[in-house]
Image 1: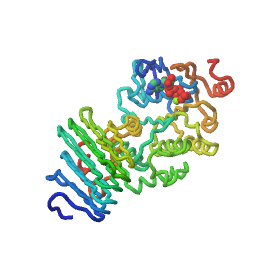
Image 2: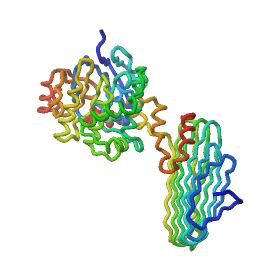
Image 3: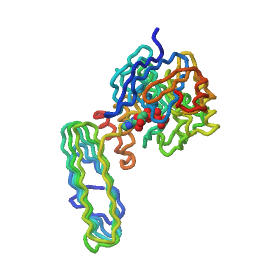
Length: 247
Length: 206
Ligand SMILES: Nc1ncnc2c1ncn2[C@@H]1O[C@H](COP(=O)(O)OP(=O)(O)OP(=O)(O)O)[C@@H](O)[C@H]1O
Ligand SMILES: [Mg+2]
């Protein structure tokens, strides 16, 4: 059987600048992989390439997701196949509300799966349960997506979208930066609830803040566009203590 | 309002909403304390609007939403003349161009010498929905009086890539993402009764 996610010798650049310089990484089904690495080493670029951001050109290598060649798929096809990214810096969408966005997204997924769209009552119910759990108010659902929200609120809204869309592969890019202690607990809880056999997580982080609530199965250390080492969760403490110079 | 001979005279507060398939030339004269509020919706159609603020306290508020597709060439010309002191004008123009269409917008404000205490505002945003569509906007500001408040701005370009990408990562096809981003684009200028025209156009062209 093929791995859940298998990245081989992945190279990507922007303009003339090579950012990913041969990334190799395998994530198994049902696992949490933490990715740690210094600023600018290419963590967000990796998440952008996995999700199909056209800013980055892939110049070599492959990404297989449940046996499917992700690099041949459009961003929306990847999303509907189950790939989700909680952005490090979520994009503002003036004029589009969170409720509108999620309705369109859920229906896109259901159309893709050849299911009927949710009716208004089912949709609101699906949203409300998760909104309550994550402290998302009705007012936040009505406002333009990410416009004028605080850093921590944006992160919670990203987590909320993940909870609503129930993707199989969740990439969380620095979810823990900007979250206060209580929000961290709430977000950590939401992720833990979602952990199951068919779902994997890639948690990009600089600290053990979120990892205290969501214990990683493995930790990968990234530097200068490559994965240098993959180990178990003891690596987190090593990074916290000694930084990246020893890798 | 009933349509009679040009130009239309305004000496009180009045609202006109214009989506008129055959007529594309409009002239308005706003008299003392008259207030004109007009909305135009040219769809693959030329438009020529001239407003003369002709009495003290006269105001005009012109809103225009344009749509062009296929290989249509649109000429939109909106001119406001502040003929007397203490008059106020505002122009808000928004539009979409797709296919191989082109839009040429000239929007003007004229405030002659010694016409004091006037305010004139103008704002335009055009969105290009295809590589071959063109929108060129030339503001014509002829401000000869010194005691005025004026501002203008114009921005033309495609929908922002990062906004489209964000929506695509949520599972929306590019065309659905475009539709969603555009669904509220005209809301601040288009009166409710005209939204269906825009919706229909978008269904066919986005
Ligand atoms: N669109 C772009 N244009 C130019 N350079 C880019 C672009 N995107 C990323 N880079 C560069 O690529 C490198 C990797 O950036 P990336 O955002 O992936 O780092 P990161 O590991 O996520 O860092 P951080 O921990 O600060 O979030 C950086 O040097 C960055 O400046
Ligand atoms: Mg980053």
